[in-house]
Image 1: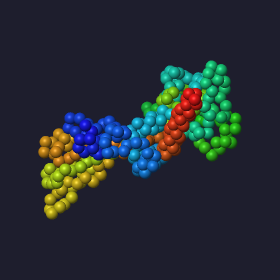
Image 2 (image 1 turned 30 degrees about the vertical axis):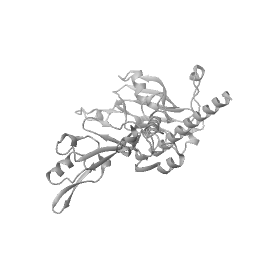
Image 3 (image 1 turned 120 degrees about the vertical axis):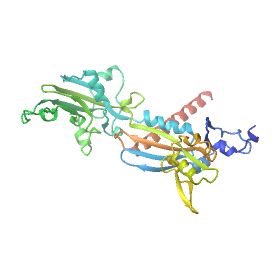
Image 4 (image 1 turned 60 degrees about the vertical axis):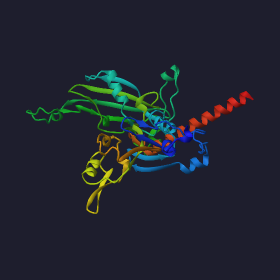
Length: 353
């Protein structure tokens, strides 16, 4: 049946967005499925087609295109970014004094979710087990932080004031109040680094005169698979590159309606012999809402699709590590997984022999 199919290339390479469903959602270009096509794995062919194009990069976010890759590998890469790139986060909270209205366990939970700016590559994992849990952390696997603050009345506040910001001192406890307490030789090793919360304006608690917090925190190395606080990204997602094809010339009032059916910047109108003619300018900006398919006179003039092997990745860092470093570390984790799998195969083969 595959030999008599029309538009085989489209079925193999495109996901088609129809009025009542999405077609060609499953990968079908495996060996022997299409007569006349050589779909056997070939390293040289993969190296020729595969590429990564960085579209946008700043200190907190990154957008890049991954082309020539199967969806299974792209999704594995996304999951590694979310759950298997290690970071440092608050694991133990020692509360010596807490007279605020925030319960100890709630306060500990809030502290644990504050992202800590410290390079996890410079630290080791803590040993697990009951004996290790009772041991004190060392300079190679633990960061110690302290939060010690007390609220008091402002003697300079006016008598008629009702604003807490004027009446009280230290009544708002922010992440900037958390201070790093070096362990061992950490002060020398990290002399050029600033260890502490990524953001200074995270509200932790509110105090009133006489209330105080006296807390010691231990940060350890971990991965998001164990707890979400270790996840290095606020979000890591991908989408397929949209493809919009005009099947015929659209002009006049229809062109203006067609433009409004898509995201801004996808369709533009150009003047051709005094008439406004629709033109696809940048299909990448489309959200694939399929709004155009609601118009009976427009749904047959446009073909909506997505390129199956062109992934648009968006990575937003929590600020612990730059997004380009996170992508590099995720690639290292994926390579280590592949190598571990190959080693297991080799060991099984040797056992059979």
